[in-house]
Length: 293
Image: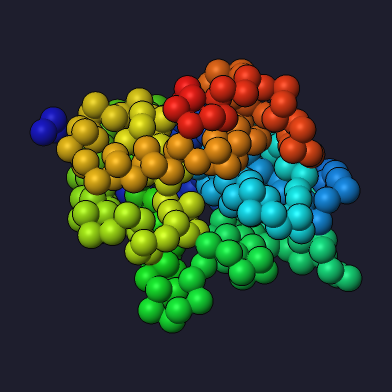
């Protein structure tokens, strides 16, 4: 390992605006709004304010899966929040999510709108509302929720840990990359061992646990995240690979992955979604099993 720096933490930390790397323009040590900006509201029961990152994809995939099952109450408007421009700090967004992170959902199906923030909470809210993708059997429900919360606790090590230091940090720090690469591979091994036992994380059925984990770890083994598939030798995790391919083959997953997406092939980006017909403007073979990633 290369030698460490001579950095010694000061007695009292102070914010250095210039030392933030790619996200220096939006990172800050305080919460709250930075400007006044009301959120748009469409005609559907569910109003989603998001971006097509792995966390955002969880919710759009679930909404598309619910619609595919015939739950008309899951119709939604998906409004694009460009976090690189600081739109998550607008007054309207902060009212829905005081943590200023995507995704944020406003459920307007009842007499009083309900705000739901944090992707895991949104998945549970929708699954319970429509009695879908969350088992009723106590043991299966506990297994599903355990893997859902495993994702909520584990993915920050993949994203903010490994992803940040490997792909985004202004300085490549060997210790940080090694530390988080080791943890990411340990997490992949956890998943691989579980998926050697059952088709899906919660057991025999596809649930919100899979919907939560797939955009992160399925995306990683399919080569979508950080250009790190070879670096992490993701080919070693055969059961994760099998699971990731099976989920990617689902048409609702292909649709959900497109919504609010602003990177990659333009034919796979649907910046805003207000009706199912919005997908018709895109190349349809992308939505069929076996279509391009």
